[in-house]
Length: 189
Image (cartoon, rainbow, N blue to C red; front, side, top):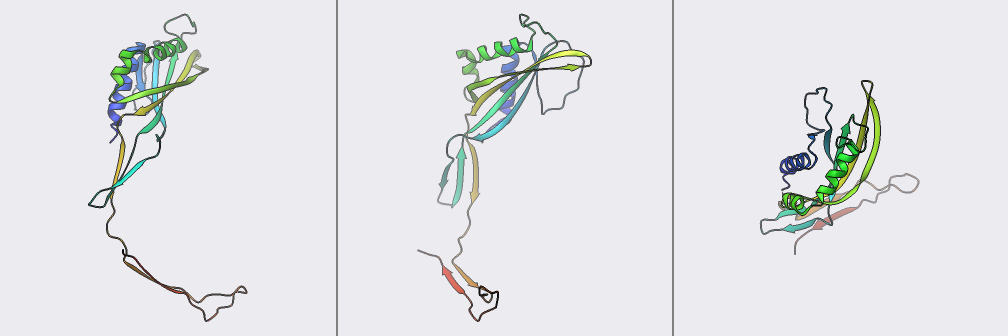
């Protein structure tokens, strides 16, 4: 099974270490406070399979479908600093994170939990909050899980025989005929 809590914990820790900024998950409630330091919000989206899921059936007739998952990890950096040369500018902060994600030491930290397959680009938009201009950039990372997502289902018995009796068949004009279709479908080897 995919250990999503471990993925979230590691992503938050690594991004905080690489950026030096406060890092929070967008889907976790947290009290707000006025702060002038940069912040990075994390979000997982676009969950999907990697390749074709593998299916197997064991001797107990348990059907197991497993596959790795691909997901997008979005980093939304926000700061009040509008100076690109500043280390507190949201865009510069995310570029630093993107560069540091490529380090072999960072790749080794992520190994065993998830990997960053590629960076999907950075988007920019600014907005005003309480009369102050906020610099906001979003960096999307295409990631893959290391563990497989496993779905098991015990298949139970099969149907040996089905007796099917239809209602009276109607002709093209809608008139009922004396024709009736009966089927006896049996299974087995």
